[in-house]
Image (cartoon, rainbow, N blue to C red; front, side, top):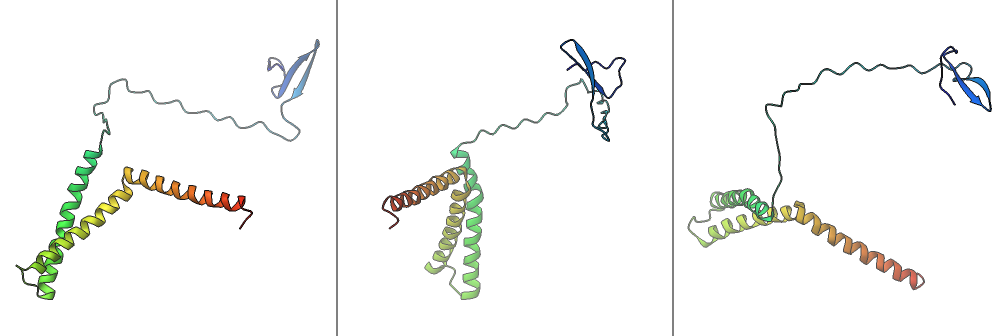
Length: 155
């Protein structure tokens, strides 16, 4: 197939085959050639280097994640503990310098810290891998049970 269009009608293709030449229309009866879009020329680029360049390097370790957890969770847990202590003193008339007040402060701190730790373990990269492993073990156990049931004849 030759796309030579010189001196021919524009909607025809010239085919030279076995010494003969014939023309075939590009489009069937009633069809029109597709519209040709011409893209606007791109604006000239700036050859100068950029003034501000931002580079982000993520090099973290388990130590960085542990420090970040401590920075976030200890003030939160302390606030919950102190809030529980103030609530116990104000509402339940617990003496300020008593074992009960100390217990309320400690349990409030411990509860908030434990919830934050469990959330962090669940959502951290290490926790996601742990969940993935545990769920894969569960999947394998279920698959093994299904295979054994099928081998036993569906009992």
